[in-house]
Amino acid sequence: MVSVVLAERDSELEIGDMLSEHGPVLLAAARLITLNEAEAQDVVQVTFEIALRRGHTLRDPESLRAWLLVIEAREAVRRVRSMRRFLSFGPHVHDLASSEPGHDQSLALRDGLRALPRRVRAAIALHYLEGYSVRETAAAMGVSENTIKTQLKTGLSRLREELRDE
Image 1 (cartoon, rainbow, N blue to C red):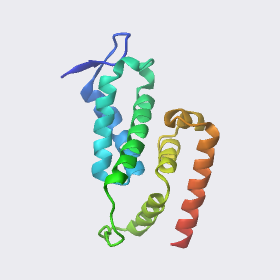
Image 2: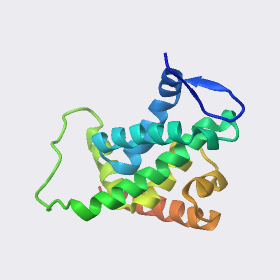
Image 3: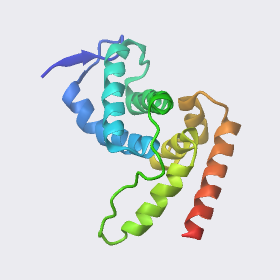
Image 4: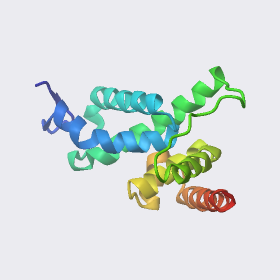
């Protein structure tokens, strides 16, 4: 197995271990931010590629997951923003419905999340899915704590309204 040096302190981490330990969490957060499975997988892959190239910038190997999530959140927002310039789907494009139990609720939640701005979705993913504090979320997204608090409050309020209407 290939090893990669992720810190100047010569500590090594097996790529496979890094993928298996942090990959599922990164994929879940990317799914919430992008709302697209293929795009989420691409974001996770690019996140690991960036991490491998910039491993020397990781100061504390104990904070690897947080560092990866910071990279991912920035990459996901950047990619979705740049994709918006090139792709535009008309209102006639819809997902196929599923007959799974509880699927209507998950569709309503997904539609509510889709209606939120991407930066708000990213804040919700990091804070509620990953359990980051407001301070950590703000640092990961490169904005102030007050901005994150506003985004979380606005996002949850809009989700509640959207789900109440369903």
